[in-house]
Amino acid sequence: MTDFSLIETLLWQPGEGFIRLRLHLARLSRSARRLGFPQPIEAAAKLDEAVAGADGPLRIRLTFDAQGRIEVTRAAFVPLALDATWTVRLAETRLNSADRLLRIKTTRRAVYEAARAEYRPDEADEVMLLNERGEVCEGTITSIFLDDGTGIMRTPPISCGLLAGVLRTELICGRKARVGRITLADLDAGTLYIGNSLRGLIRANLVRS
Image 1 (spheres, rainbow, N blue to C red):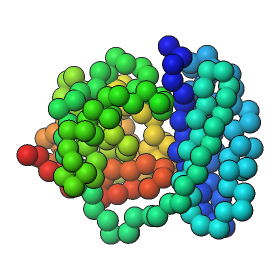
Image 2: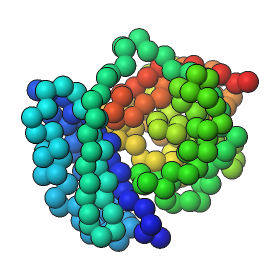
Image 3: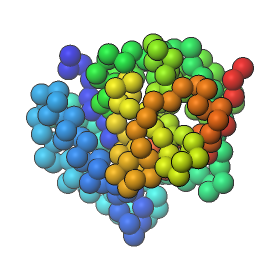
């Protein structure tokens, strides 16, 4: 299957440049290798071109397809307030842990779009998906983190059926998160956070109804 493209969504900040650029480019290269795509050797240059002349924060979206074509778009980015809390709800839609493409960020997003469509925008800021075993996996655009009181947050393993998020990778490498399965019962006993590389870590309130 090559009827999709790889995606990387990055934050660019004046004076700082691209946030977590090394991790984004490493994931893009690794994903291309696993899928048999050519290597995205021009990605960094294309990203630099996209931010030329920018004077405010930007959301940058890069896509890379099986033919080696790179497209980059940019949009103004407004960061969340530091004390923001997102309302999260559970999806009926389930992820299949055997689907290895879930581990790679691609334009094949039907399952996430179906989960997001279960709630109106005013009902949920994010929607959490479980796998066929009822294990917590990820949000439609975020990784899941649980503060269970141990001092290191827990985040579900890739084998549950989820994306290897860039923020997730950074927190694991920095020993701020560790890999461990999470059940719905676990969520009741800890503090929920969600996040991605664009928006960082966000406090979350899971509403079940």
